[in-house]
Image (spheres, rainbow, N blue to C red):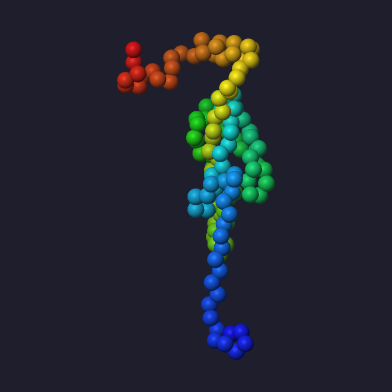
Length: 127
């Protein structure tokens, strides 16, 4: 030990600061990804931040609010060289709060083309 004292154990306490971008779940990181209504409906490649820099996230067409899309190996490294976690991109569909005249007309036309509503067939919603 130091100055002739007995050898001992060294304990290190590490505090991990919370990130404004990521929520941590074990070795996985969760990132909320704002997605436009159009991107959610049609699909898109969206650049997202990861701890290692930006990557393109493939958002499939028809994705729903809250869906978790996995980006392998972009989470937190495990202790002692264990496998790295994943980044889970949580889809947050952003509905426009204001529409211009043309956007409103296009959405009204889409509504006319669609058959039924998402509530059709759910008990208690008929009539």
